[in-house]
Length: 180
Image (cartoon, rainbow, N blue to C red; front, top):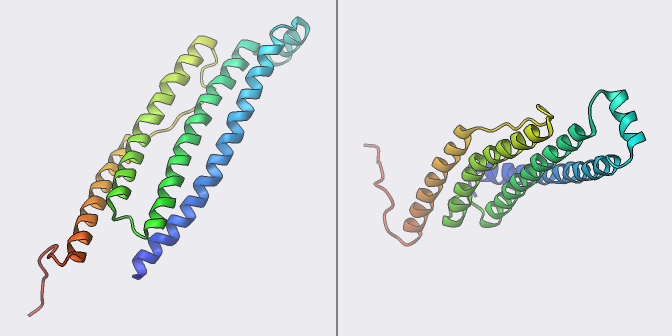
């Protein structure tokens, strides 16, 4: 195994672990937001508790409920994204290289996820925040450029897989440059 491929594999393992931790944290946040939304929904039916919370905080139960619901959506999206990335890194390690047709397709899918999921999450949380008047309760960051770069890199991985297949079949993958 080449030194560069070793670095790729070690980095992939570290990133898989980080993605696993992030997915667990998102799951904890998702459960916490779900519990918070249920509790706020229950408090809505107890006028004394509802009044006390609203009086002390200056924020209505409806806004707390909306914030929990928006947080639930954002944590769910984070969990889905982290799980998809973790699965990719596990698959890449099992293959031993990013240059496989399956790996290229999976990386392309990650690029699409990195574009579509945050945009969808931003739209859904904005709708929730508008309905419940809890603006700014959730911040969704996304980078279309990152997703597009990942899609482009996936084609490089696919090309590398083609070259690797050609070289293992004994076909020349590309012309060799020799020094004179």
